[in-house]
Amino acid sequence: MAVMNPKASAVPTTWGKRADEEQTLFPGDRRFSAFSAESRQSESERSSATRRMKNKRTSLGIGNSPEPAAEGFTVQSLLHGTALSFARAGSSSPALDAEMLLMQVLGASRTDLYVQAHREISPKEQNAFNALAERRLGGEPVAYLIGRREFWSIDLEVDSAVLVPRPETEVLVEEVLRVASDAEPGTLRIADVGTGSGAVALALAGALKRARIVATDISRKALAVASRNARRLRLQDRVTFLAGDLLEPLKGGFDCIVSNPPYLSEREFSSLMRDVREFEPRNALVAGREGTEIHRRLIETAPGHLRQGGRLFLEIGPDQKMQVEDCFLKEGRYKDIRFRRDYGGLWRVASAARI
Figure 1 (cartoon, rainbow, N blue to C red):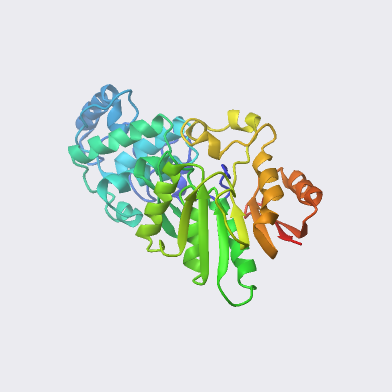
Figure 2 (cartoon, helix red, strand yellow; figure 1 turned 30 degrees about the vertical axis):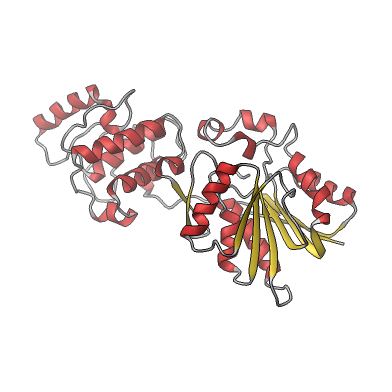
C-alpha cells in the first residue's frame, strides 16, 4: 500500500511559508499573525484578543484540551492560524488539512471558503472545529476525522478499519483498464484481493460496465465499509464482497486479479509518519521483513484462479521491482511481465499474464 503522495495539492502558495513569515491567507488580504483576531478590530482590541488567545490556544486547535472559543474569528483568520499550527506540528499539508476540517464543520465547499473568507465563525462552529483540530494535532488522519476520501473521482467512506486510499493506487486502476479495453467482448471477471474500502473494485466497476467483480478481505469490518460504499454508489449489483484470506474465497476463473497488498517492511513501518503508523491498520501496511511476503503468496497462488492469458496486477513499493520480478520468474507460470511507474517516477505496478 502506497504511503507517500508524489502529487502536490494545489493550495495557496502563501500558506506554504514558514510560520515566522508574516504571510496573508489570500493574495491582497491584510496580514495576520498566528494569534490575531479579526483585522478590522482596533489596535487595543487586537492586543486584548491576542492576550486572550495566548490563554485559549485551543481556539486555533493548538491547546491540550478543548476550551470555549474566542469571539471574532473569520473563515480566513481561523484557517490561517490553524494552518500555521499544523505546520509547526509537522503536517505535510497544513493548509489543506485546515480547509478540509472547516469544510466538514461548515458543510461548505473549498470554493465557499474563498468566497466567504470574511464570514464570521460562530462559537458553536468554532468549538466543533477545535475538536477536530485537536485530534488532527494528535496525529489522526484527516480522512478519518471527516469520514471520507476521494479516489478516482468517487467519494469513499473511510474509517480506522481501512487504509486511506492514496492517489498512487489510481495507477493500478489505470493499468487494469488499459488491458481490459483490449479484451475480447463479453463479461469480464475481475477479483480485487484485499479490497479495504473497496476503492479499486468500485473504481473498476464504475468504469467497466461489463465487468463482474469479486472483492475479498480478511477483515469483516473493512468489508462492511466497502459494502456501504458500493450501495451508496449503486454498484452493489456488480461487486460481490467475500470474507477470507487473499484468494481463498475465490471460485472459478478470472480474467484479472488485482491487489494493492501490504508491502512495507518492518523497518519501513517503524519510520513512517505518526498519522500512518499509529492510526492506520498495521496489517494493511506491513508484509514481513522484506515487505514482499504477500506479493510472493499471490504470485504463487494466482495461476490457479486465472484463466489462460489472464493477468495478475500488483501494486508494489518503489524499491521492490527486482524482488517481484524474480518471484514471477521463479514461479514459472507467467509471461509478459510488465512494470509501470507512478506520476512521481517511482515503480508502482507489476503485472504478468498466466501462461
